[in-house]
Length: 168
Image (tube, rainbow, N blue to C red; front, side):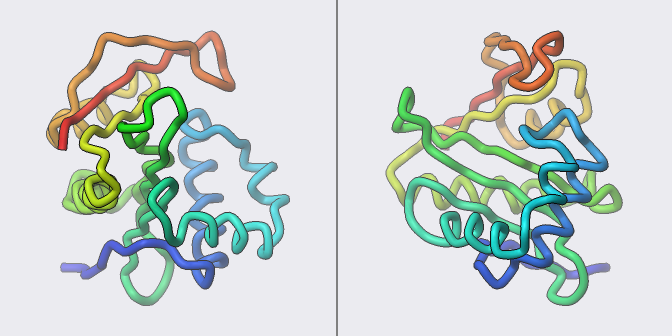
């Protein structure tokens, strides 16, 4: 059994987070809002600055699944949008393929949920590409429900995203 912990990101994670981000984009290019080329072009300092913004505070967070040595194995972020200040939007959820189907996803989502609750927000929302049935089932197991809201994918408008929400 492999061990790992979920923790909030720090600026010191820039190198490992860059590696995970490139893996995320190579594995699932339509799930995220930037391309592999854009992420690869960002400097180490650029990653460090982005992580600094998510390392503390109540409006933006990122959590990673860290085995302690070696590459990070998972990521989930949380943020607030002006239209719904009492809802945390879960974003950039990713698990290294060999850790899918286990407990890592639940631990990452619960870290975002705990952070959200501490900030006074008691609802999580996320969007999934329609047709990604494995992800939908995984989120349903974590208590998310399909809201029926459908929107065009932000970077590939011919695709559709479905919205899921969960009270916490």
